[in-house]
Each structure stands twice: as C-alpha cells, then as structure tokens.
Length: 127
View 1 (cartoon, rainbow, N blue to C red):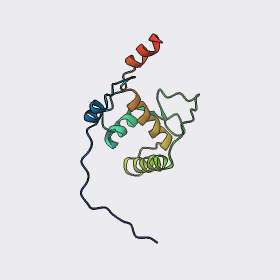
View 2: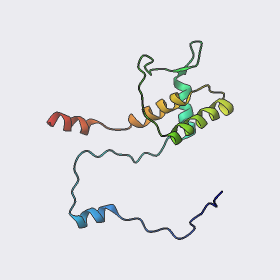
View 3: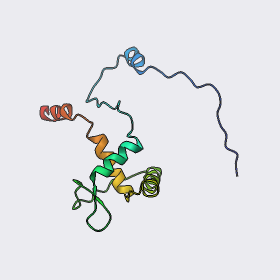
C-alpha cells in the first residue's frame, strides 16, 4: 500500500476574480444567484426533520413532500455515502428514523428555497 503524501507547504494566495475580470475587460452576463448562505448545520437539519416528519404506520414521511412523484436525481457516490452516515447518526444518536433520501430532500428544499428566482423569471419573460 502506498504512503499518503501530505502537502504541508505554504498555500498560494487566492486570485481576486474581480481584478482578473477587470483586466480582461469582462462584463457580467446572465443571472447571478446569491450563494453566500453557508451549509445547513446538523442541528438545523434535525429541527427541519423533526418539524416535518410524520408517521402513518411505517417509516415517517416528510409532510409536504409529494409521495406520488419519484424524481430521479443523480448523486455522486460520496454524497450518498454522507447522506447514509447522517441518517445513521440521526437514528443512533437522536432516535430519528429518517432515510438518506429524506435528508437529501430536506437539504435540497432548504437550499433551493433560499434562491430568489425573480431575476430568472424576469429573464424568461423577456425572451
């Protein structure tokens, strides 16, 4: 088995994209989506799930999520593995019976709901 090589040298200074854009004469086009919000914390995710998970006999379902529609959303293997770990954590440490898919649904809903689509709608109307 090969040894893991760890780079402990100094990191390079980040390039200021605004300076580069100005020097290249670039101009903004399209729609900008504000992504300054940080990732949701495990506690905030737990609160979201506790507020919306309801049991009707089997595995609890997310209230408001459509059961009739099964959207196929491709995920990277490493993302699904993380979702499984989070689900296992909630089951073992919090007593919350939640599936990796329900966690993914909650994360997608939380982040997508933060996006202001009014600019996108305006662009679509103008076309």
